[in-house]
Length: 280
Ligand code: HEM
Image 1: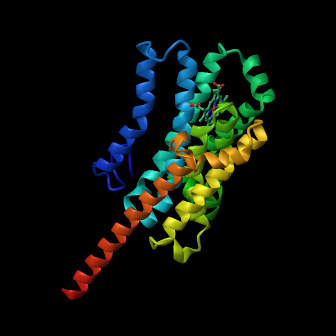
Image 2 (image 1 turned 60 degrees about the vertical axis):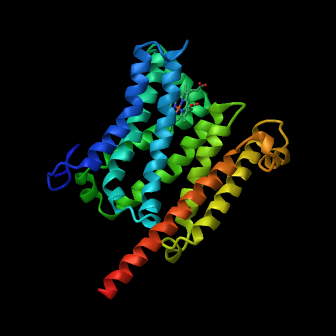
Image 3 (image 1 turned 45 degrees about the vertical axis):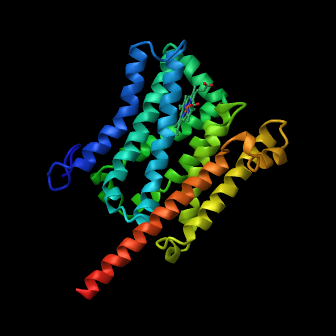
């Protein structure tokens, strides 16, 4: 059986150990900053923000496993998906705990706030969902649920969308960071919508990058249009004007094109290796 540092055969695994280190590092850094008074005037609020961010990042990292394994031929990722997902749930737990600490452990305040403030209710639903997925991530649950396990774990898709919604609402006036993260999520979900035969080759990826970028720009414009009085057309136009810097839609396009170029290199390498084998 695999453990924290070993693979299923009980051998020490560098990749599993390194991943564990990467997953634990942000929480440790935030904790050290808290202890050394490095988190500013409202350290618990800052810690809450930090853990919220890392919950979303690790959730999206777990959703990136399937597309990256396919297009970059990174087969090793499969063995890491479970711990990335569980890490996301742990960061969500820490995030909620910090919120409870911030409310001085007052259960009445915590319960009424979660019940009455919409963004907290949404966060709570996502937290319960992630908890359920983490509990059922063990081998015992996989064999117990059989085929239903996969269906259950597809809940990650709507949970990530709701987590992003919570991120957007609490961002208030400036949703730039939330829009960028939402753009990465859109790329991951659009890839899953591709017909199976288009999931391996590299050439649909630049098209996917453009589609994810356009969708990101639309989400941003729609958010500002619906949640503020800012003209959505002006928001769309800002993507084409260099004085506004690198807008989230542009960054998503860049990230998508980097993955496309990488996938092209991988495909060329695989083809060259196959030719050599055939020639030999
Ligand atoms: C009971 C559940 C939850 C509660 C009570 C909660 C509470 C909060 C609070 C109080 C904030 C800061 C808001 C502010 O400063 O105005 C926040 C921010 C945030 N939360 Fe949650 N949250 C919950 C669940 C989640 C979950 C499950 C996720 C991820 C999937 C998440 C992701 C975030 C993110 C990304 C931020 C923004 C961080 C930033 O601005 O850098 N939260 N949450």
